[in-house]
Image (cartoon, rainbow, N blue to C red):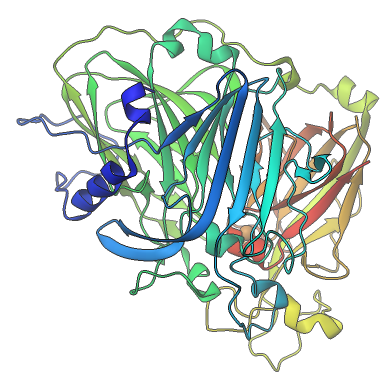
Length: 565
Ligand SMILES: [Cu+2]
């Protein structure tokens, strides 16, 4: 990224956001990824980098202040919870081996008086912080100083008026890539991330010193779909529980359909981050290949070209990231799109949308893509059968299931749900949303993943006193299969440790590293779909979580504790 970009002020950002919202005209009638069209008058670039904070001499010390912000977004004045008065929050850039310190200051007003029956939903102004993709301790690094800790009781957390100091000691062998950060208090994460409280966190390492990558202009794309009502506010959980076809559109760094200008032949380095709380992206660029070199925070070791000719674009579930190189082709205008995507049943298709406009100008700049293998950190070496067997090799079967439990508050719940006296904490009873009267839960199946597991006969949400926990031995290597008993593609996220995906629906795939994975669609209790991965529980003991990254599902209980001992 250029120095000029990093010095852009928030006023620039707001002005540009406002102008764009007022009406950017896009070529009509373009569908699917296509060849470019010619452009007669050269437009200004309306793409804006978020404010950027970079480490110096191995240190980055940041303050994130949470408060209400009033700002224009996509042509509308909104008043929402924010981090540092901006949507997105600042981009943080550090190197493998650096120390990142973040002080969270909660300047939100006291929690409102809430009559919400589910008690954990009553704290929209309390918070905490998750660094998504960082392989760091999930506990304390010293007394009163927190690592990637999210195990707060909802009624505690970082309450209004409180501060919390985090310190992340990023190992010199930490994979370089695109991570991000956002609040993670159970019951309040959807409403906070849903208004735009999230920022990019870029870790640089060996791959960034490859000459062709070092020479490329780097851009962060924070894809967010901020949710607000007609008053420009986000105050009710009901607002974050809508259906897939009625979600707000994606913005890029707070701007709807920004315009980027590249020189013909130029190579740029783009970091895609899906920071939406529900919708998927399926990204492609007209007339160009997007050369993927990293998925989530993890270098692949090569370039995987995803071009207009591929059956799908780059699929990014909420929480996923992709690092891509793009080499600008012939002069013209090309659209960066999200293609149609099946998020649930065959009828539940996300429609195509234009994310940005890429203008390639006739001022040639000859740049090359890297050739040959790219560096991969040794902690992302493939996990062999031998390593798995010699390091415990335990297999676990985890089931994600939303149980459509009852049609009215007075009806008894489904037979696989036994809330007992906890009934209020298990169900969201307000409004007629997709979440109403449904238990969002994880269950643990017995049996071996390689044979037919016996599926659980009870499903328990995270906020329950009977919530399940996985206890894992430090230093072990395990193979987990995550089953999906719903039509919708729950995105599964494991904190702290990246995993290597090896099978989808029981069939081997080219292994790849991730920290968030889209479960296949159209699962059911009788025929669940699944993803199988291998994971090294190296380096860090302590408690963290796995959960659905559709954050309203997580807030309703689709989460489970993992404790490494
Ligand atoms: Cu889900």
